[in-house]
Every structure is written in structure tokens, then in C-alpha cells.
Image (tube, rainbow, N blue to C red; front, side, top):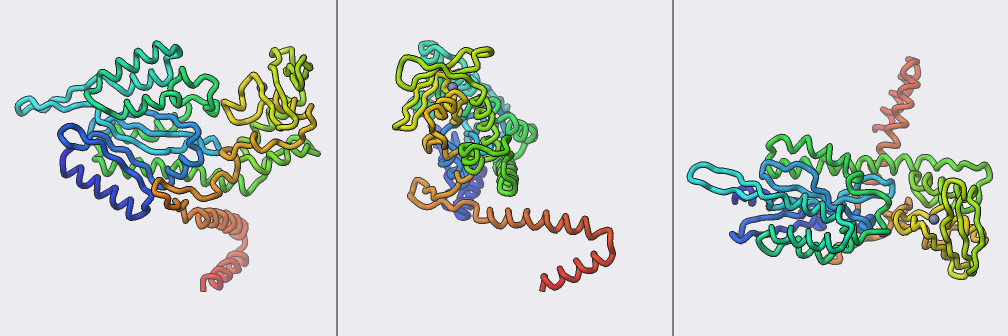
Length: 390
Ligand SMILES: [Zn+2]
């Protein structure tokens, strides 16, 4: 990277830190002491990671910017099942080679597509190890690949069987993000403009959450029963609307499910026995636990209809706290999160003001629509606003 660009990039990051000291960035130098890879995350990303970092996907299917660097983002899901961004990385992958006056770009085989294959394709451990090793050899020296290998249980498909993934694949996770960013990469933006564009894309995602937050505060989710059982009422108050819908679906299915007692204590085979074979569920009334063979709770974090059926058989009428994951609740953002230096990270201080603004805008707009048809009303609204404005 040219020194001028490196300088302006460092200044950009320093300005960000001045704005909010929880902004993080890390640089990796190459053998010529030039910047090779850049990683960064703003305060909100660090917060989001604290709340929703239980499932992280690293996505690199984007194009590259004019610096010819592969670009990757760490993404996950918020409590509305919307995309959140935990951090971003620009990496050194293609090398430039000087041949006399002519500058020629040589593309190395894409490490990132190899990495993606390691992440998703190999379901046998030997196959995974062999391919990771092949990829590792393409990179000249100690890189982030070594550090990420140590965490392989967290991301490689082989190790991820039956693991908490919120029930979605990475490709689904960042599809919309991919579209947002791709448009930009076709043009030759410089690095700082790229950072700014990326920031706008991230802000777009945050606005989406703000809208969902606003909607969920305004209206309670619809419960399908007229006299709902306590568990549904509890879930409707705690879960975000989209998660409550999913939970309510499971609850409804649990009402239709049949349970056959098995030999063991509180062991049942649960299912409808027409469309699916039953799953084995083991309950423990003293610990208020239920474990179902379908493993939905382990993967998605929402109890399955089979487990709900057995809870009911055991006369447990409220959802035990361990089955109400905080990451799916309305209060997930409550509480203090500290950064790696032990400082409290300030959540968007404008959040309440922005919600208030939206609330008032809607009210004013409705009033304006109604008043617009009657000149006397327009005068009344106008004079009242003038009084308020003083
Ligand atoms: Zn189940």
C-alpha cells in the first residue's frame, strides 16, 4: 500500500477513535513492513458481537475494490433475525509485480474460495484437514489462517454438525449485504471512500433494526388463541415478534402432537405419527429440562414442538428460563458491555431520540393528512405549532 494511502487510512481510523474510543482496528504488516491486512470494527459492532456473537459467519463472496484486496465481513443475526455486521477485513491476496515500466497484476489462486470450501464443503475430517493444509501452503508466512485454524470447531462444517447455527447457512445470511456492497465494488473508489460507503451500508442495516424495534414496541404480537395459556403470554412479552411467531408455530404443533410413554422415567416418543416418525424426548421435572432428539433447540435456540409437548405433560406451564435465550428477546440490548480495555461501550446515544423522532413524525403526519382538507384545521394546527415552537 502506498504511504499516502496508508497515512490517510490511519488518519481515518484515528478520527474514528476520537469519535468513540471503542472503535477497534488492527493492521497486519507484510515482510516489507507495508500494510497487508486491515481489520476494523466500530463500537456498535463490538456491542453487536457481545449480544449476537453466538453465531458468526465470515463472508467473502463480495467483489474487490480498486486496491485489489479481498474484502470480508463477519456477520450474524440480531434478535429480529436481521443481518448484523461484527467487523470487516481487507486482506492481502493479489500481488503486484513490477516488470520494467509495465505494471502487471498477477492473481494468486483465491485463498478465500478455498477457505469457504473448508468452511462449508468437507464433511469428513480427513478431507477437511487435507484441504486446509493445501490452502495453508499457498500462503507464504504466518497469517490469520493459523490463528483461525485453532478455532476450527467454531466454523468448519465437519465440526458444526448439530451445533448452534440459528438454523441458517451463511449464504442466506448475507445475501442482501452482498447486493448492497457489490454495486460499489464495480467503481474504482479509493480506500477512504470505500470505508465511508461501507459505513453507509452498515448504517442501512442498523436503520432496519431501528424500524423493527419501533414496530415491536408499538404493537404486541398476535396470539392465535382467545384465552392464551400462560406460556404463550410469557413468550409474547419476552420474545421479539418474529421469534414469537416461530415459537407460537411450535406451540401450535405441540397441541397436535401425540406422545407415547417409553420405558424410562419421563421418556416419550413425540410426533404426529402420520407425517413424521416420533422423536425421543427425555424430560426431568426436578431440573425443568427437556432434551429432544431432533436437536432443534441446540441448533436454533427455540424449543421444538416435541419438547413443548413433554413440558406440558410434566405440568410445566411456563417456559423455564434456560430455554428463553436472551439473544432472541426484546431486552437483549439491555445491560452494559465492556470493550477489551474494560471500558463501558456506549450504545448509540441517539437511539431514544431517533425513536422519539419517528414516533412524533408519524403523529404529525397523520394530523397533517386529516387537517389538510379543512382550512380552519390548517389554521389551528399552524397556530398551535407556532405556540409550541416559542
Ligand atoms: Zn424435537
